[in-house]
Image 1 (cartoon, one colour):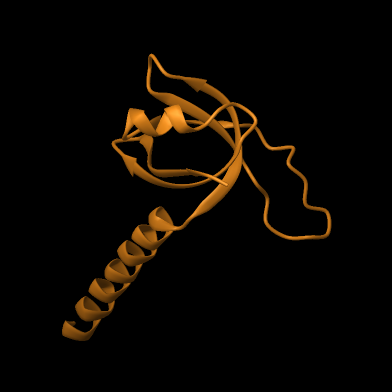
Image 2 (cartoon, helix red, strand yellow):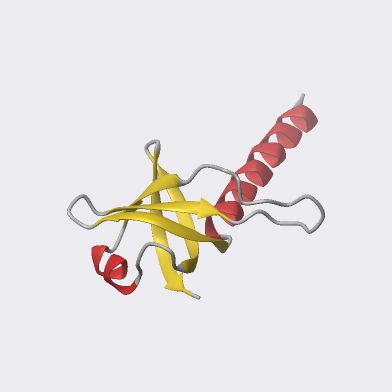
Length: 98
C-alpha cells in the first residue's frame, strides 16, 4: 500500500513538472491581430517539422501580462512567446519580435 502511494505521488509530481516545463517553453508564431485596448493578441502558432508542415491552423487569442509588450509588435510580425494558463485564460508572459 505504501509503495502504491509513493508511485501515485511520483506520477503527480512528474505531471506537474511537465506542465510547468511546457508553459515556459518558447513558442514561435505570427501575430495576426492586436487589441491594445483589451490587452489581447492573436498569434498563429508555427508548426514544427519539415515534411507536410503548414501554417493552416487558426490563430489563438492570448491576454498580455504586460500591455507595454504589445507596443513592440504589429500584425504580421514573427514572434517568440511563452504562455501560462491561469484560470482557463492563456496569458503571454514573454513576447519578443524575431
